[in-house]
Image (cartoon, rainbow, N blue to C red; front, side, top):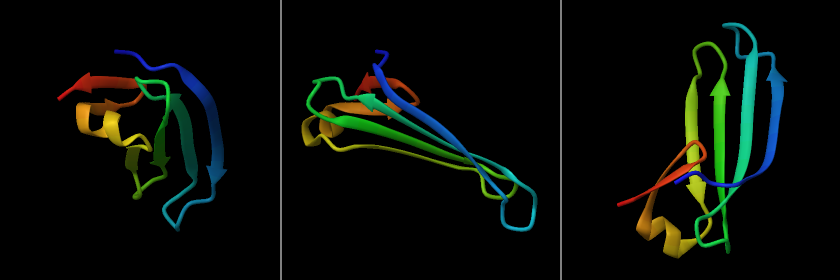
Length: 73
């Protein structure tokens, strides 16, 4: 299922010696509507990582989250 996006922001980072890049932050409404799902991606050379978390205990137990999506476990 697709999640409703609530916020979207990108900011420039000078990087850590390998070049500059972007840090992407997005906030979505969780499937039950009582919490939020947070997506953060460091798109910086040498430091590309992604973190997705949900602050709703019930939805964390029931779903696996992707960028703007939730799938039942």
